[in-house]
Image 1: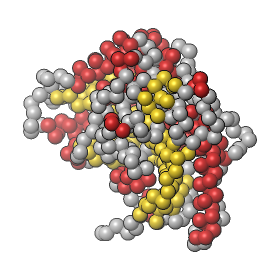
Image 2 (image 1 turned 45 degrees about the horizontal axis):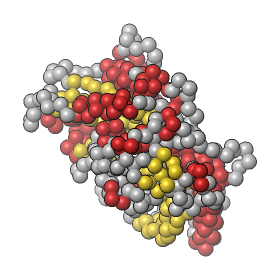
Image 3 (image 1 turned 180 degrees about the vertical axis):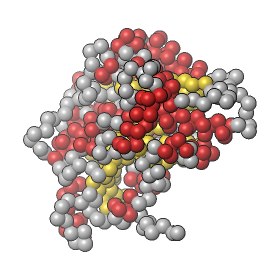
Image 4 (image 1 turned 60 degrees about the horizontal axis):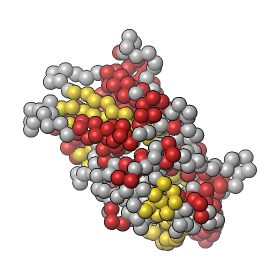
Length: 467
């Protein structure tokens, strides 16, 4: 049967540069990157927030709607200008791979008109590329980055897209050279609070301590194509498919109970939502890889997961959530497949938990030294370069419990959040909360052959919301 969904056209109608409302003081002009910033990939951390029309609006009154859009846009630009004053590095430009010139050059602000209703757009979400390439600002589609342009690009880019139904999508893209997903979330919430002008909300003021905790190294002063690859495990591919898989709260509870029962004698604490969904995706990905390679290689398969870990709460003196920068590392879990032996989910949960638990205060202290940090990067590379076996590396990150669904610009909370992730990431997995806060949406990026097998895995299907 032909799809009844309408074609949605997105047209960029304007681009502006938004500058800070107050100049950055001279003593703050040179913002040092941290060691983790230096190793971070030259891509953008991004999110898209979807908002329905305000109550009482007449969708057919285009004149009134246009006035309403202009009013909202003016408010957004004014509050954005005020917010980037506090988050001053985002309005600067990279200088080498060592610092940011906080010259108040500004951030890019796009406006777009969506010729269609939000419901028409939502009906096509099975095609992730539609979402990504139309609502994320055009120059920043997370294709393999152009290193020659790195010093000219804005570090923060916003696109506000208005639908015919008066709904709105706000895309925020912040350079991974200066910020991780926690910082991106802090910024988005700070901007929203400023825009809503709600007196009960605190003004968010970030702290800038990452470079003192993880000092940069002058040997890394140039941005190179492979910078950040080993730390994040990120690679690009031409034939990569991105699909969304939804696990509702009930299915996750079933999965947690199943794994807890299987590991009752080996696991002290009940498995978390993120642990069980990560393990299930890992297992199904391994199976897809095994099936694909069965006819072409006799080498054993080693499967490696690099799970991003937020260091702020794990330090001996925990850092505040508003601490600015890349304050993350990766926990590495490995599983070597044995022909004829079925891997169990509780075993994978155990591997992930042990890897993440190694990231503690003592480990972080060692990580603050360049030599130890570099050793961890080299060990990560070694796992990928084994010649006696096939090594499959998966990069996993969780945004669960990030307060993105609390982002209220003054017209209500978002009905849906997306990362707008590019389809070109290979073996990437991003976990996000569903709107209720208890389910999980997983964005999985695999090569076409692997995805064709993965998406029909019986065990995976058993725990998806639609099965």
